[in-house]
Length: 169
Image 1 (cartoon, rainbow, N blue to C red):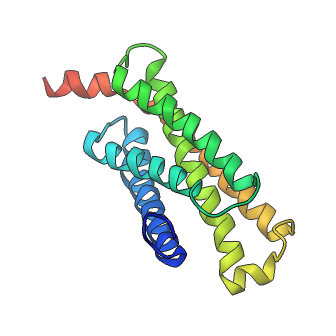
Image 2 (image 1 turned 180 degrees about the horizontal axis):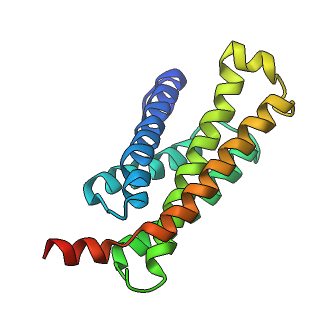
């Protein structure tokens, strides 16, 4: 039991939190970054749920260090950078692209794990890559990486919240 929940209830809660982070990250945060906008309230939802996803991942009954825990450590470090840059609001300097790229990387790591879990849990995908080393899994993850590298580059280039602030003033 974790927090008084069965492992099944805890897993469902963890997955729901993760999906909220992914959906807000893709639809609002990444979309906003690409359009040069910052939707502050939705950004807090994204960062908070992505943080909770990483933290709750450490609370599963795991006996040793796993790749998933490694992703969780990296995710927390990247989230710390994004949160620091968001709270500093030093958008005129490198903080603008540091925030954009770190938020994109945090989203990527969450989606990376979701895809890996999909290949483990959904029978049609599992049949294509039962060990996670088959071409279907590797191609899916490389395509995902390529998409997020492109999004990260474009987000770092187009995210200019100072221009939005000046335009609304």
